Amino acid sequence: MYLDANATEPLRPEARAAAVAAMDLPGNPSSVHAAGRAARRVLEEARARVAARFGAEARNVVFTSGGTEANAMAIAALRQGRRVLLGATEHPAVMRAGEGAELLPVLRDGRLDLEALDSSLSLGAASGEPALVCLMVANNETGVIHPVAEAAAICRRHGALLHLDAVQAAGRMPLDALALGAETLAISGHKLGGPKGAGALILRPGLDLAPLVAGGGQERGRRGGTEALPAIAGLGAAAKAAEPEAAARLAALRDAIEAGLGLPVAGAGAPRLPNTSCVALPGVSAETQVIALDLAGVQVSAGSACSSGKVARSPVLEAMGLGELAGASIRVSLPWNAAADTAARFLDAHAAMRARLLRQG
Image 1: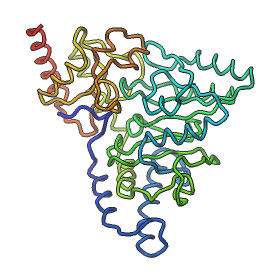
Image 2: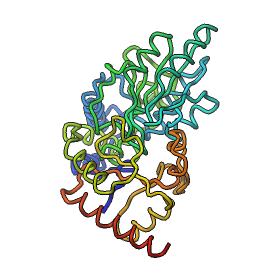
Image 3: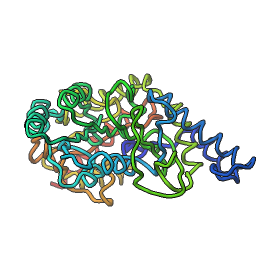
């Protein structure tokens, strides 16, 4: 039973079909002959689908290799001449791209401390120091949804730029890039149910960025290198197929799991993604739980999957002030195709694990 969708969603059939069809195209999207034009049509159709899903203009969608590159591209370009502020629970990809940044605290429920953001930007504005704020729309470990609209309003008031990491939120909740008021927004194909290897950076109208990867002028000169057409075609198909309106079904399964476990849930008091639970089993390490459940055929995770396969105490949960629970929490993230009996099957497996660990203890 695969319950690690926040690491990678299962491939959607629409995305598989689009990627396979694109593999059969021999042309380069930058070539002017018939084969190149056919490849270009597939590329631009995917761009239009991404734009339509996320409330953007197609010309402002820049394809990348994934969410990490999209975040890095935005931060590298926007941070020039600016101090950088990051939420304390940001993804490692953003933390690395924003190295040397000031960390903004989060509340105990995991949401950004808006008063701290306002205060920090006020001090910077008073000294004439421009800023870039980077904030994830929803956290990859807890599913906590940050108050992005409020943060954007504070940034506008102080003349700060805002970059949004929407990798986990995309496809799981309504997202309108223009309405959110950010300069840039990053998404990743495999978190939508598309193939690994493609993502996108969405730009506000009128914004242009220097490329992180220079090359032959692809992507309107914003990202060099021949586009990974099969992965991008799959991303476009996944973006079209991912229906945030289907969230109620996953939320019901998530709530059933949490009620059945009766354990502490990180961010329980905050708005969260419908598919995500971060639950703690006090006194039992996250690594022990992950391994025990895996041996029982249930695949979950602890922390970010982008940490070289390591299971360690979660910096996200530590930033939320959860103390010892930070090392005893696992993430259950339901995939888009979760079966109706998922909650019951997981609860059975978890109960068996707890009983076995208690006997051993």
